[in-house]
Image (cartoon, rainbow, N blue to C red; front, side, top):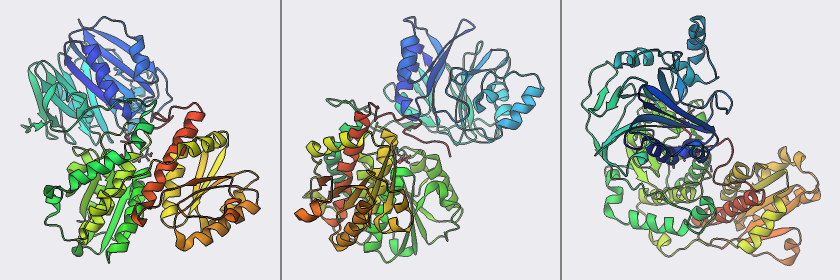
Length: 584
Ligand code: M6R
């Protein structure tokens, strides 16, 4: 994944660091920067978060130019050697890269035969080794013509006064402010200092210097692009009274609900869907990754209850291998908080080959996914900073519910207007978290909507607590997974559906007879006899069926959060992960 930033102006160091802080959601394995000053490079690198790099820097700052990088490791261990920037063999050229070069091994062996020495294992260093001496636009074109794969590159040399850039598949933006220039993976980097920016397209390359911005197309011709205005809200949220963004974001659930109502009650909210006729479609696919995929599963249920159309939810990374029937009568709905998830973007590009209609639900409306979709809906969650998705999941489910109702012209806001989510009972959830935090494995089970909640709860727990967890349909346990039940293994039973409660209870008792320890999350009133089977019971507020899975996940998100805190982990930045997953 990784985030890159290049800057020309005053206080290069300070502005590169500010840029990296904005990009840290793209990875925090290591961070590094290089500044070009008086024909020399000033280089600083650190393993770990940007904060670590910041601590290594002295107070001296420079006017001029520099590039910087925050890494999410794909090739090669997390080490100083693999930390960007990377350098050409003669040390004159420095480069930062976001993406994956698919043919790097071939290129590397060719370069090694030509006596280039490699100090690390990254694919990015291979690109750096393709440069030596003077940098020029021709040289950039020559190098990118040899690359296969995804790249956003920022490149400088000791002698040039420009920052060169190139892009394929990984996002890249350039901008000019009153007294500065930027190239970056995300416009949030320069939103405070620039009014407009250029979105670089695949195959484009160019350079920025105090003279201005030059962008060239694939054919090497200058591209007079139209700048876009920065009219997005980039206000960076802070933790306020909370220790972590994750808890703050869970506690913003009702704010998200308010935002959604305020946005969707405006007539123009569905402006771009005016010409849209859902009856034209005979198949709907809901596509996403991780939490967004789970939101898709919830959406599938909302749609199936209302529309007489086949609906299927697919994991974006698997979509192209399913041989699904996709044609001009297919509506493909892509769900992505960031709108930059590479698997989801690839799935969208895939269905375009079959002339399917594409509609995206995103939290970032200027994102790549949004720009490539026929229709876009804003999930209005506000900035989500914790890697674990909480309020965005809630927003995705709510907007899918609104969409399902909109399609059949059902009143879609009145139910929401009278509603407030309950934030669960911390006095019960915290003791449960203390009890669970030393366990090595935890199971979640449920049926129907509750099974989807189990999937999402399990993902949340494993993601931030590193406890092995999995979710199973209650009825499926006896077909295999029951063999895993051991003495004292915690099994969290999610049960909100009265119609299948008795069956779910039976499945839970089958667990108990084999030594499993039962924990119940439920909105159903139970008697003492049932109660006695459960070591912990977390009551969930009853609400309309459609909202029940959203109401329930809040307590389970909190459980995951408190378990991580009990384990002394930082829930906001789980190991090995990043907020925006821009590689396939
Ligand atoms: O930005 P996206 O919604 O496309 O991200 C998809 C997943 O990577 C994301 O939901 C991930 O599963 C979360 N970290 C889970 O909490």
